[in-house]
Image (cartoon, rainbow, N blue to C red; front, side, top):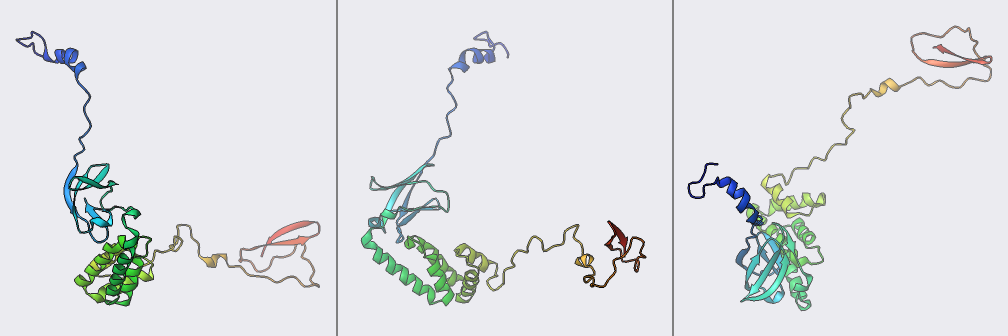
Length: 255
């Protein structure tokens, strides 16, 4: 707010009156793309930023250039655009069924049969679990999960993995991440505790069922004389009420 020696004016006032109206709006944050090279694997996918994207089968084994921004992931082969996918978060997958040619299905299925056979060699439940993992309209895109299962066999041994797969199959849970979690915590042989029902624990106002027990009396016989209004009550102390019909009025007495 001091008076400038050259302009003979206060800098803040000059900025507000002359300069501020000429400034443009603050631009949005610049979208910095990712540039890298990736290899197309046998499952017809390439990995970019921990996400998987399908590539046509003719590029299997090739190394492609990638440009990935916040919206699109583009794959290039020597400057030629090969494939475009929408950007997926880490752990996501974008698969185009057209990327697997029809004539290659037989070869892919033979690879799947080989994987299942390898898993079955480590245990019956491991083989069944591999079949469940590959039970998909596009089973070749699930091959990485089976490779991860085989990696756990090499790390923990066939026995623990067999037990973990058996437990997961009993609970109908098909997830390699669950198997890995069980093996890391060594809970593959532990029976999981099922959640208790909501009404299992007594509530604040729960009463003992014995309090609702009553003495059941039989019907009166045909020769029984109805009690009168002035009849003497029976043994006291039971705390029950009974309705006694006498004349034209109903009378309640303690029995």
